[in-house]
Image: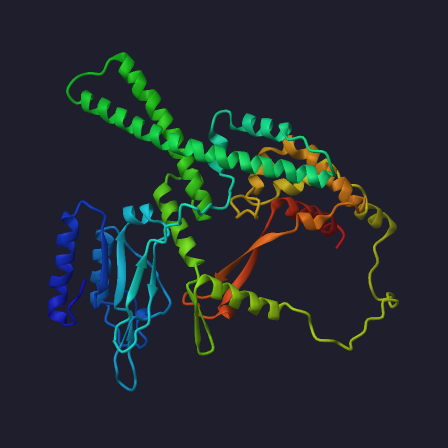
Length: 433
């Protein structure tokens, strides 16, 4: 796609886009030099006229297109004057159906070299067949008939000799393995059932246009609609969980919207290159080495300090009373552990084991005995808590066009099983401090 630079031809160019795309039944991908910016921040100076951006955005919205956010740089064009002007004139637009089919699609800015335009690389980033995604407990599974009974049977059938922590990890590991295989098998059946229901409903609708449906056919249509609503509800919750939205009610029917938000979150956390002084770092192996080295130096051993603390001076430090000390060191009860679990927020990213707070809340009666044994060991000082204390580090950009590692903020997604211990301890301390 190439858009004219002359203003007198831009209206014809936009009209041509509408004419071509409106007649196209196939998924749409439009990429190239449009010679129009969309917002004031797509230019490095204040010489901005809203006329063509307004019309361009109106065309994009009318055709239900979305721009795949570019990574690697902010602008795609520059002139050769001493006081350079930079603009984002090149971009890739896709229809929402195509983005749903290729959710990992990205646009990456390559090296401009001697050209005044930056070439863009469009990639669908489809994972290989050998790639195994991380397990995540889907909240939509809770809607399936017999699911809770299946979880109970798997949990209770896992019998392992050893310490409480070994038994807990064995049950979690076995349940994760079972649900991963179960989800893979039912996913295909779900899609086939959905297609079959839609086809049958379409057949009944067409028949109803020419003749009255029998009582049996009306009953069948009612049953199919109810089952379709159940399948769509599960699909909606799946993408609601991935989108991590807060401003929409859970009952809103916005599956496609959640899907697009989830895809956008994935692209936001993807790192294609980083700058290190005058060097450009690319490739997964090189990026991993650079990022690891940076944080090792940042959080490494501190320099020797000559500051000393006299721990015998406690006169000006408030002390806990004997009653408060007994409360803080008392054994843990089921009530306070349950309260801590049910205080946890919903729809939060899980840790490496894939089980969110909702799992512990729904299956509290199933897991409470195994969990309380861990708290007993913890109170007695016999629990190797480090076997629960591990997580996944995620780098989130602090700004839209993050280029160096300092512009990313690391967060650690801990297992909920470990966060329960910290939550219970925090609740106790908060009543004293």
